Image (cartoon, rainbow, N blue to C red):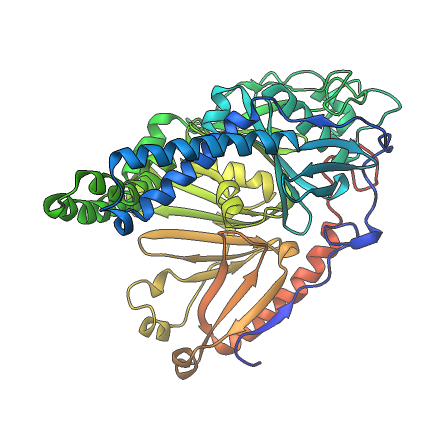
Length: 525
């Protein structure tokens, strides 16, 4: 097998994303084509204008060294004033020319000031609909809808709607994508959308969690529905969004301690200080010093305060349509992770967390495009006790038992390539998943269900070839989780690829097509 040769997994089962024209239509009865267009919230120009203004200030700060002698505080004020006028003028025009409606099984979005653009988002191709509330929008009572479609495409967000309209439209789109929303009769309860028999009433408790899991809450989240005149103006049921039971709520105290015990946080602080201190000592222009310090401050913010703001108030709940995640201090996000779309899982434990037995859980989720989307949606748990984390992971990988995994070490000759942590390199296989374990300062376990493997690659570098070693990589969808078995015996690595191809073929056949809230037989519930 040549270097880097890949072995594709078997083709997706019918009905999975990417199935093309043969995909089952799950949008229910068509919405009338004459449904009126709707506009975004009138305060949208104000919310958007601040973003454009911030971009102009950032560009000015980045290039301050080039215009330091010319740029006086007075001229800087004039430039900022012009940017302010331009930003809000463009925001108004953008709002004026943006409209949307749901019609004929799709969401139509018309945008563009100079060049008009019409987007048709097929509802049966929707993978996720998230509600995002940036700081300025939250102050104005607004929210944005961000949509991801099958194939990893990201559609332009609907920014901004009122918070109530955003939640209602999200519930309607998810219900239509799940194939449970029709126009003939209203839905009478959450059980009509595929929930369990008891889902018609609000949950009174939570799913049982392991003993000692202090981060578990016991409250039910709100059930948000669409009124008789729904977000699209079409008569729909009153309770489209199923009730939820809270699984995990990360306490603020534990979040702060986890960041203080993260080596990455202190590395950013030390690096920023190494840049800032000499600049302050030898700098001769206070105005230039302040603007030049912006990148250093941003670096520290991203590693510490940014992480705190991003994961503040992190809540994980369970509902019939998947795991619902809410988090964010400055930018609040609501998203749903259908368990069937989790493609790979990573459990990591930084060295300073081991005494408390805390771990972080990240996932690759099918349907999210781009590095920013993957970063925002990859965290399943920012910090949690190991027992609680495994309890949550079993929600997306049923039957997983890490204690029962038989781990296979690398050959002793691998110490020439990984002298300090070669003993920590292992891989394991169970009936349902393939796992790898690695890391010295950050112990990591990565796993991928056999049915989710898209392809495999066998590779061998020059040093590996000399030592008779090779690496095996299992490919998933785009995301931060990588499943790699490094420095295996070359012959063993070849057998691993062939055996995994067979396991993936069998796993895909048994896994069947994805359904959000529809049973394999095709009916709801």
